[in-house]
Image (cartoon, rainbow, N blue to C red; front, side):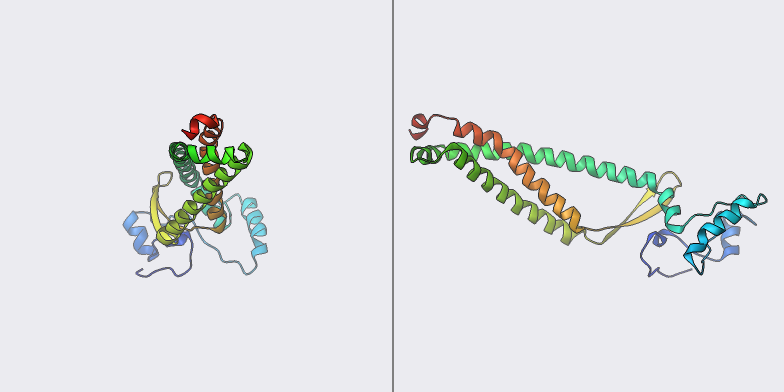
Length: 213
């Protein structure tokens, strides 16, 4: 069958054709692996499952279409989610280390300015809050740029991979969900907060007089 599925879902990874032609090509005469049944009422699925279990002549397992695919590709989904989480943790750690270096350089360059503000009466706590807020705003802007780039480049992009449990091709679509974008922004702000804490504390602990020279 030559065509394209219009309904979104995992059926886009399947190939449909004439039954007898496929059985002849794969040498599976009079053999069926799965059968799809369209019920008039979704509530009849439980009754159909009980009827199949009560019939000892046939070794049948009745399951919903969505549950069947979830069981088939559940292991692959866990692998993809695990690799994605690991990559996210590594990127976040790299961002925190980069923040430590950048914040130390920026705070060191502004040591005289900060010492002057302390001499004018600003407390360490006030300056620490101001510097931390500045770094958080900068990292929130960087996170917004990253979300925008991901949305423009990856949103609704279709890809495929191989499921080694059944040696079948699994297609999926990448989506930048609002929840994921919010988590990315929160991680960016948290990275800025953690990365700037040590350099800001070190600069503000320095004596005023040597910093003004």
